[in-house]
Length: 394
Image (cartoon, rainbow, N blue to C red; front, side, top):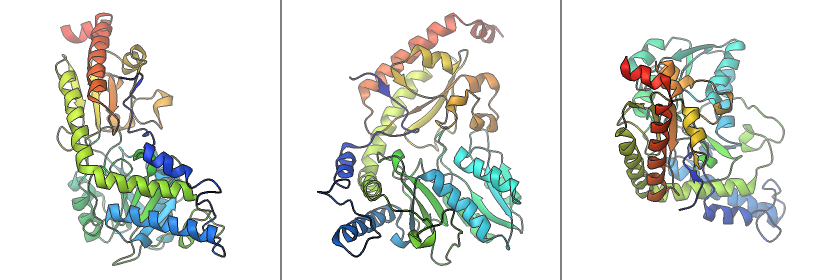
């Protein structure tokens, strides 16, 4: 077994060696490196063809039309384009959108900015298990509601939202539905011929592809979703996203999603086995709490509070194991998780929470080592903690 151990797959994944080799073949003179907009020569035409092959690979994973896939620099840009693009394009129809307090900052920060620029945003409270209830969403819908934006899988708790039910409710009221699928694509089946989803954001680096590339699905049928672009200058991607397309990154993303779709069932079953093995070891400890729904969750992510000790102390005691206290985008601030706070988790439990996320290259040996090391660290820290003694005697 190799140390250190990486169990922070929800933050980013290592590039699959098959994808890394493909990247290299689209960078040099001997490979396919041309500008895909340079259609007057073979180098550009080869690049354009490679990009369209990747577009089809992404569409195939989602059972979508390749013409509905727009390349972006990642899920953050895709979320920005979806939310800001829709609200600008639909301004005459309404200025109200709905999201939840447990969304990723890549959605919440866009909503905050839209709220500062004339839009009204409703932030839904989650249930204690971090799911969003249909009743709460239905109660928030208004005649001027244009868009609902809710993630498929929560990046901190791993909880899965019911896209079919949420999308059906939105469509019944003539409201567009955007989904941040950064944590679910390639891990859960997504069939956009059946799901009433209008926009969906993707990121390659959550699926063993490179950082800096993502995509936005924009429905064209039965009704075409209208967007205003964020970037101008070149007219690429049907005028929705200007800029020279990074052939190497796009080809890598297409292949990463193709592999994920092909290997999804077997890989997720293996990851689920490892997750359950780790959780069962932790559950044997006293005063351990699972944050999130016990059944409706993605295989690779779970969030645990070891009561009586601070998560930062556990992480400091285990420098050889890479885990996190929440989203990578907020971990540097040392703030309590906004997701756990929205769920109603008390301050002590939130301060004790650690996110474990497993993936393609996680092994049984790594899981067993982590279980043993974490349990030893928690027991030792509890022995030193007056807080733990107070909790046990209260």
